[in-house]
Length: 169
Image (cartoon, rainbow, N blue to C red):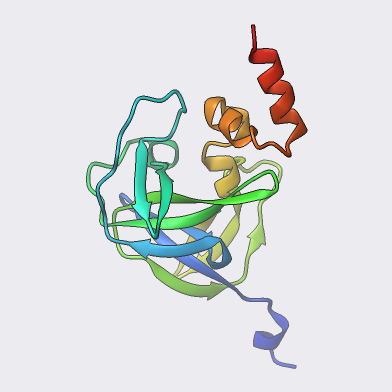
């Protein structure tokens, strides 16, 4: 057996936020789209700047740059439309990126307990060690308030029914 057949290579999408590169598992990526109009509206969900319309879907835009590089993005080249899990459901989210994206194969080193919650692991590519993002920890979810309330209000969700009952006068 050769070394290349012993390694378990996985596919990742490399993305650029400012001067840094990050990776997202390719199976969590739906598509890469050119910047389109962001519809902004009053809401109380932190980390959501608005929504874009894509393939008949309303896709929340989550600018994660400030969390990852310390400053929000001022320019955008693309939106990486990725999959985010909300309990048993999977929804699309759009992450603004500033540069080209690239599909690569690499071996994943899983995150350790000392890594930040948004780090799913690490890959090596082109002499760089790159963070693989855990989108479930990085983007808004059930724990973040109003988005979670809306996401939990499905009729078949017992927690959503309990939350609705508590909210009634």
